[in-house]
Length: 515
Ligand code: HEM
Image 1 (cartoon, rainbow, N blue to C red):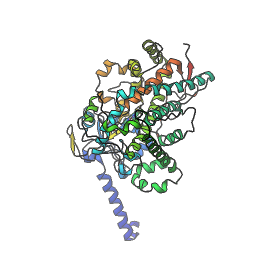
Image 2: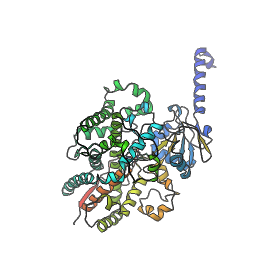
Image 3: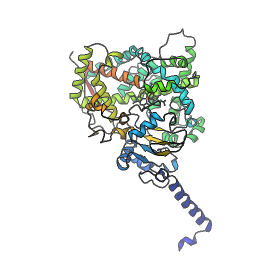
Image 4: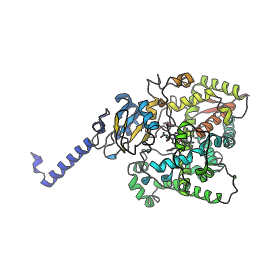
């Protein structure tokens, strides 16, 4: 046979290569390791090809629907980037996210590989360090402190309304980025105390850098390298800074780090009580207390606190920006699309707003009385949960409802797949705010709805996000009717490469209401 004419060293190399591939394939097949069902992984690549082909949200949904509520995943030679186990069973999620939260403290992120100053933010840090930071930061987002921010949010909302009036008069359509101008103004003002007016100053360095820091796609080769080879990329950071493509992202992170430090230096000279933003609150966060806490927050408050360093404040400033700007922008984009394409829902919402507010400006207190608005936002976040997939990693071996989970296992919580479960949400693609009436909610396990996550590691900015989204939606509906236009893509198609983003910009129009 020809085979035997190969030089013997090459035969040895080939045999070793084949055996290594077989070994890697079997040793990284988590179905065997955990004794769980799951899709068959490809040698070396695990499920990565499937993920790239279908996008994260559809991949998770297909796996859950085909293999059940607890499945094994494999990322082949890419370690556990895709996760090891995926759980949609609500009772097991309660264990992981709440009951055993002090074991499942970590995310599948290595803070040593994160870019500065993000590596020192509450999203990136782990274990005890995260517990202390989360406990310190929690009171800064209390309802009392947010109430004091309602005027700032209303000012930003009024700027957007003035701009929409011009669009309405000119009969011009606009895309979903317009909501980002509002959420950017809100986060700049509430986090950094800076009034940016991004609609009228689109070239403001904050606006430019924010767009670079938050709008990237996993198929972008630079992002791909950062995601798959974080350690190498971190080591090469000083060189990458000068490479086109990387320069933008790294530069924008550096920009926010520097701006934050600059702000903090100036703050040391300001009189006490002069500022009412997160930057200022973080300076004294370790001394803040609050009485308005949810059960999860009370739990978190039992953990030790610590004064935050300048690096940590800079990291969290950047994080609040990244976590707060794009998420609320995208959610408002989807909600406005759903209202424009469901005029009967928009009409009912308008009637509620007119009835309850009687033309008054939206405030922290009066928007909380708009129950149908809450239902609409909840249903919009069920269909389009922008934080579509989260994870938890246990810091020691543990058992969850009989399943042994060793330390370091990456447990995936596929939020989108959970929200699309036809058992919990019949006809899941349909937009139906009636799914969130108090009666309907009472019949469902709370772990079947997770747009902000759950437990001590859930979204710290949830109250701020809901407040700003409610205020702007009320202001917009008090002034306009949201309409589709010739360029609106109906039905909306989600992108496969950009996680939980529309394939095409969401184009809409507004018509001024006859008051
Ligand atoms: C519609 C808007 C938003 C959505 C849908 C959203 C969603 C999420 C989700 C799903 C998580 C992960 C939770 C988990 O792992 O259980 C998260 C974490 C986080 N979010 Fe949000 N978020 C939003 C707005 C905001 C805003 C406005 C801020 C801050 C200004 C913020 C700050 C954070 C932070 C700091 C974390 C990390 C918490 C930790 O690891 O301890 N988010 N968010």
